[in-house]
Amino acid sequence: MNLRSIAAKTKLLWTLPVFITLIGCAGNNDILPQKLGELNLTTVIRGEKATKIIREMHGKVLGATEYIIGYYGGDQSGNILYVSLFENENDARKDLMDMSVKLVAGTPVFTPLTFREKDGGVYLRTEGMGFVHYFFRRNRALIWWQVTPDYADSTYRDLLNADFQNI
Image 1 (cartoon, rainbow, N blue to C red):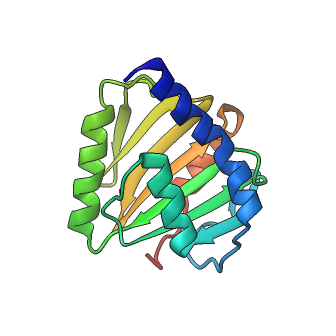
Image 2: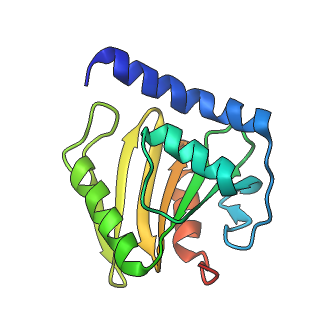
């Protein structure tokens, strides 16, 4: 991956909140936590708009059947919860494993992964683009939390305790 490609991806990630604000899609929320740490959920994006955002961010179509994106602390904060819903738990588990393998040693954008096991699940962490990123699987959902470092600890604890029963 060359520097121009990295710069283009970084620019996309930084302009994404502005883009989302412009298209403004606040959907119903029956899955995402209303609050993580001190951060309130301010915007939820679902449906085709969420799918388009994920597709543009990754440069390809992924295997999930639905995406839900939640902004915490304001749309410009960069604190974003991405939930990818899969057909079943096995598909979600496979996607988590595939993503982990790609990120384990780090990339030009992300630091090498660290992980911990808890209650039979694996919880992964990396840093990149000025954020801390946590991701894990819960039932048929892959959950990715992008958060500014100053809110990382308090919001992550709340995220781990969140009830994702509607997934």
